Image (cartoon, rainbow, N blue to C red; front, side, top):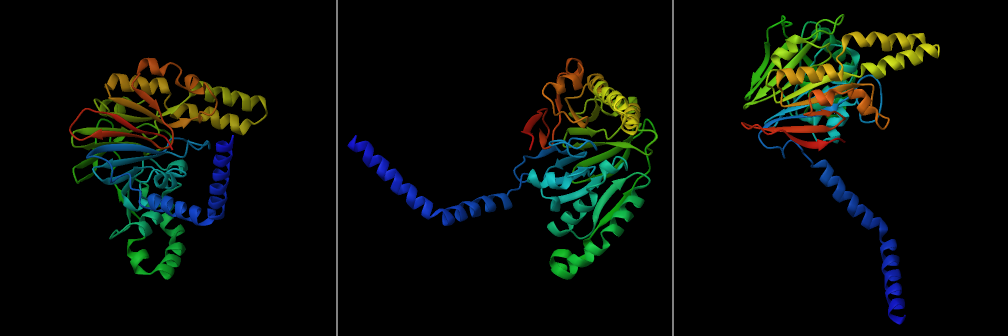
Length: 356
């Protein structure tokens, strides 16, 4: 009993000392965490190859883990982004992919949920990186109008930041966005939109009518390939150019769940909500249809993104897939932050992150 009493007394003394020193201890711990966080660079840790991560797995329907559509692609050590949906820029930071390192953004089309983070992405790239010009934004006809609009909206902000930070941090010549327009591909053809540093990026036509133009992008680097669908119905043209790609990142809308949501809205008197949910059924792809494309194109792995609706209820994923996993088992339902690596000149497909 005496020994136990001594131990308890000793622990009490240690606890008292620790409590009295809590401020310096917490300050030291906080500084260590801050240093580790500020110095983190996930891109520098990647081996040579082609890598992708979802900086946004969702749609306009807000939910934790399902930010607006945004796909990060890293070729070697260079960061590219396809679409700039809500929270895309913030999620890049959370994944330790510095927005200051973005080489270019590729837009699939101009629906608001695919572009509404573009302005903040441009600002973060401007003040957080060391670039000699504005952020290149690639897209088909209409990209100039989008880019000009963002540049005008952020013009006052550019002036404020330059006045505050000066040329070293906020050189106005490097501010904003630069439209990189390309001709919309015809059905059955690829248009090269970027070729440099060993990376080839090609655009192909998809069907998101009445939204025109709408394109998908195929990335190729050192024997590895990724195709990102953007928004589209099931497309034979996309399937043709997805043939044999390592990863197909394809949009997916749960037709069964969305139809039920429309009916519930109708019964509750929300005719506007019912119509919106009904209307979106005719210009998206179901998980089953995406799985059929992946199977028939013999892709390596299928990643579902632009998930509609967000999967928040236990068991909802099974209903959403509706048997798609049986059609093409090598698949993953995306969430924000999920990531895969394709090492150069190999056939490995490695999941490196399960989410944020």
